[in-house]
Amino acid sequence: MLSKTRQPVVEHAAAMIYFPKTQIIALVNQKGGCGKTTSAVAITCTFADLGYSVCLADTDPQCNATESFGVRAESIVEEGEVHAR
Image 1 (cartoon, one colour):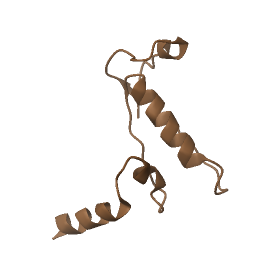
Image 2 (image 1 turned 135 degrees about the vertical axis):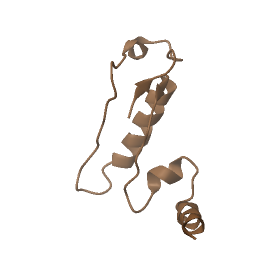
Image 3 (image 1 turned 90 degrees about the horizontal axis):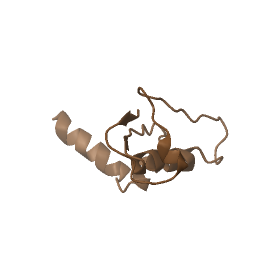
């Protein structure tokens, strides 16, 4: 989900792109190892650097996108169990 919250911090042609409403970008492919997670993380970081609010939904059981931002997948499960009590 993308929404414009501040002026772009990068000064180049790509920074001139503004989306008038929320955009959804989906990367899908049945084949493994084709760069879906790497591309999703790179796109998310690029839009964040341009000043957009972003949301990356990591639905892969391996949680590689989640872990690329420094969040351990095990900690999510542990926190979920703690809050479920």
